[in-house]
Amino acid sequence: MHGGGRLARSSRLSGFQSDLKAVAVAIVALLRHRWARRRRPEPRPARLVRPEQPGGLIATLEKYTPRRIGVVATVLILMGSAGLGIVKGGHVDEFVQGLDDARNAIANIAGFRIQQVAISGRKQLTQDEVLAIGGVTGRSSLLFLDAAAVRDKLKANPWIADATVLKFYPGELQIDIVERTAFARWQLDGRTAVIADDGAVLEPYVARRFMSLPLVVGKGAGTRAKDFLALLARYPQVQAQTRAVALVGERRWNVWLSSGLVIRLPEQDVGNSLATLSRLDQEDKLFSRDITTVDMRLPDRLTVRLSDDAAKAREELFKDKKSKKKAGDA
Image (cartoon, rainbow, N blue to C red; front, top):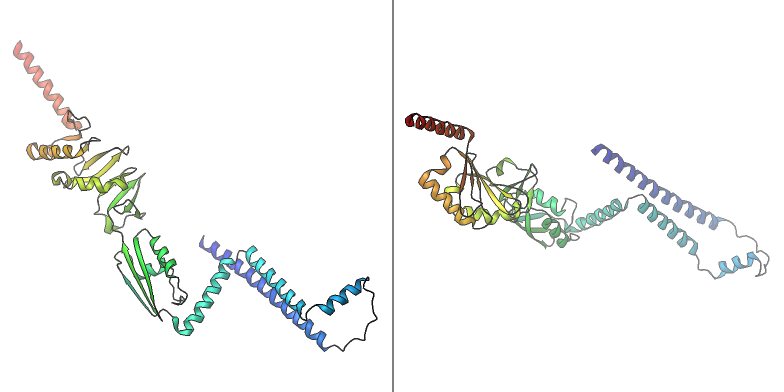
């Protein structure tokens, strides 16, 4: 894929160079023609031609037209042809980049080379990454560096919330950035990303250093996780055992505990439900029981679902009690 890109770029550059070569050859040929005409002996005076004949119009134009207008017109035509070739051949970006590099090189020679760069506020990004994001290279000169454009490029990066770019002549550049903080891991459709507290995706993958962040799951969970996790933090009895939280239907939350227990919270009055869970766990060890689900979606009741083994044991216990009761009745 990259090889194809290099071949295409090489082909475009080759065509661009061919166009420039053609223009240069044409200009040299024109200059040679003009020089040869100057060295020829003066022709004998031609006989007068009546103005109504074609030759009369040409003679009149030659008489009143400024000297070297033909050379100027030819050069303009050749330059227009070269410009058309650049546009048609797709070399505009290379041409503009070449002009930019040329003016930066002149400015650097004149003493406006960027010799010192000071970057503050970075935590996750390296200095080279900040410069690359801002488009500052070793060829850039301080004179022609657009500070506003660099700032816009920096703010377009998801890690950077704000940026300030200052130029101190002749060769010092100062960049101050405000980085976003990694807040949680957000899982959607099987893919997990690192997000900030406002839901902005910072990285489309999860590096090892972010594995300790809370895990939130579901559509819309990224933007609503901050408020819910802040509420959950008020109930450490539940938070300490929470493995993940999932937004269901963009309306309510499920809490997954490390033991595998799923707590289905209601859409309204979530704080009271979390307080009830904390109390039940403190008093009755609810989270340690052999259950798989705690359903709190109905306001007037709490429903628990036993695990398969616990349900089977409970059923056998009832059968045993029932058989003993029948034997006693007999």
